[in-house]
Length: 214
Image 1: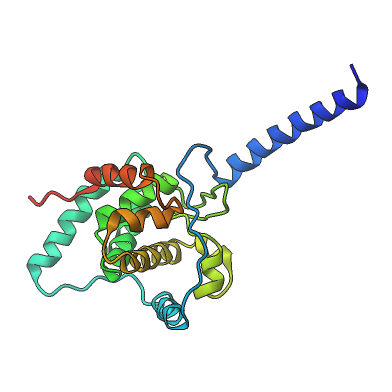
Image 2 (image 1 turned 180 degrees about the vertical axis):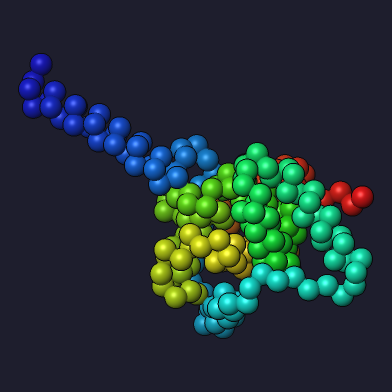
């Protein structure tokens, strides 16, 4: 056996092993639906509108028009919190996550069940998940969005509210672009336009997060 060839093979094996360890530490899980939105040209008006949507720093404090609406929200929070317990065991962190997700979903005109299903499929509810394409956080937002409509710091995409806000605003943008066609908007979100597997997976997952009013 050629010594150089043997050394090269051993080096490649060690390198592959180190990549697996590094990916595990960073939160990347091979085989998951890795977010990989494709960077497309944005009109200045669109970019400005998206940037304005991201820029607001209002805390996730829901407001309600009636006592009935508030009670419905509290029922939703309790019901969904129980379902999420296996993925997020710590109660305070789980409630904070759901409060923020509800707020950002409603703010973007999206169903919380849909956003929960995207988080489940994209990151399995892991805050520091990184895909093979470099997408980050709960909703697997690509770093180029931080440059296009944010402050340019991709590290902020690991912040819970920032990540959920970016993800919801981006999905809302794709929904508007596709004139309300959720199937096409989801395939854009995942960077898999023309393929049905990702939208179908998200829509199946959504059923498990739908709220059942008591």
